[in-house]
Image 1: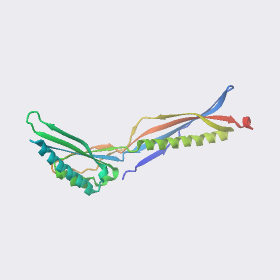
Image 2: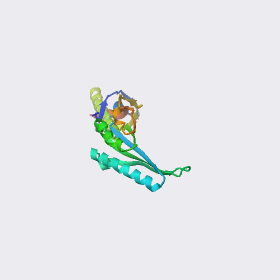
Image 3: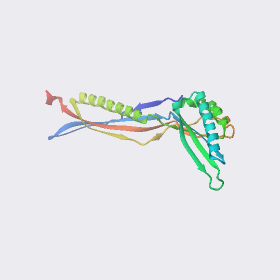
Image 4: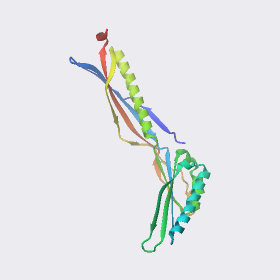
Length: 233
């Protein structure tokens, strides 16, 4: 199983003290947190279509296949709440008059399912002419970003306390705070574990590689008001 999320905190700080006769003294501290996000959200798309001379026949056969797929998915252990209809379309050929019903069933899971992907596909794909696609993406981006941001601010505060103590200052209120986000970085690339044996019953399996992690740099600059200890005694 791929670790869900790894956050490395790297403090890259600089401090400067500014003072003028008519302005308060300030201490500026820069902090940086490297946020690495694991692609632990797996989306599975099972697409299939049926074509018949009558729309009722096409819909009926497509519905039967859809029900069989959903039964196989739930039997495998996937909850009903994780199964949805990604797309559904009914069209008529202008030349032949035939009716085609196209449908995609979408399943969203964590990366745990990758350990049993072959078993799942061998249960589902033989049910009919089914095309399968898998994509991996990052879940809970906001939560991970906020966690890294809090860590960066807290560490900046600890540094500011240290500098103020060693420099003979009293740390005051926060005067301003700015955040920055660096460029996205692509992590290790790994193949999605689908064996050739999973392409059963003439099904089409889209097999690709995917970056298992992405990351960016979250930076924060905090400016504190400071007072010399002699000024407050």
